[in-house]
Structure formats: structure tokens, C-alpha cells
Amino acid sequence: MQGIDLDSFLRQTAPFRFVDEVSFCEEENLIKSVRLYMGDEDFFVGHFPGDPVVPGVILVESMAQSCRAWLNNKLGEKAEGFIASIDRAKFIKPVRPGDVVIIESKPLNDLSDLGTATSRFCRFSCVSKCGDENVAKASFTLYQNK
Image (tube, rainbow, N blue to C red; front, side, top):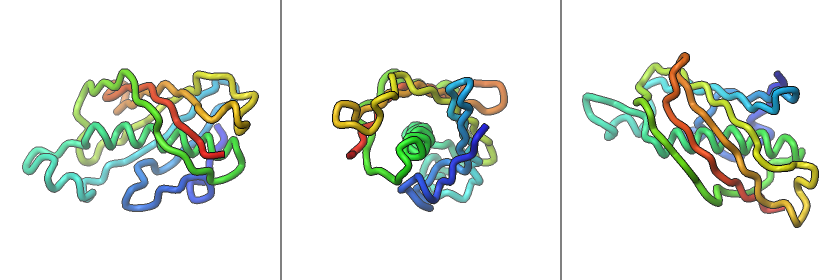
């Protein structure tokens, strides 16, 4: 697994960075990320008092940041872009303070022309896990301004 320097390839910073580390395995075409939700994140205050749960939108953002870090690393720069679409998002089990989430993502399209005017969209399939249990899944498309 090759680690990706998040400060060099991810535009989001604290408190809106939702991945702690990102790496890529070329042989498996797999992006793997880790996030520990400490419990002191601001969103836990209101979601939900006395029963804190990581919001589903934050789990999706974690997946997108993981893929964006990989995509920018592949491009060799901190390129701008955004989530163009989210498909088939499923939230299977709540993620709570203290949980470590492992995100496994795969690019779904041919990347040979990545960064060209004809290839500004990159699709991904992602699964988030706590231990051996799936907690969320999503497929989405990232757009890049390049």
C-alpha cells in the first residue's frame, strides 16, 4: 500500500477533513482509508443528544475525500472539484464515537485519459466498515476542474 500525503492532495482541512489516512494498492486497484471518530466532533452535539451517531452525509463525505485524495495524487496536484452525483447510498449500521471506520473504494472508469478535457468525471464504488461489518455503501462521481 502506498500512502498519500493528505496535506498535499486534499483541499479539506480540520474541522472538515473526515479521513485520517489514505493509501492505495495498485495491484488491487483499491483505495483504503481510515477515520477514527473521537466523539468531540461538533456534529455529535446535536446528532443526537444522549445517543450520538455520525451523520450519513459525513460518512459519504469521508468516502469522497478518500477518493479525492487519491485522484489528486494521481493528477499530481491539489485539483479543485466536487461531488457531481451520489448513487445507491446505504447506511447499514450506526457509527458512534470511538468507532474506527475503514473505507475501501475502487475507481470504476478507465483512467488512461485522466486529467484531459474529455475525462473530467471519475466514478467510484465505496464501502465503509467498522471491523468486519459494513456500515455504509455508496457509489458516486467526482468532477474535477482541470
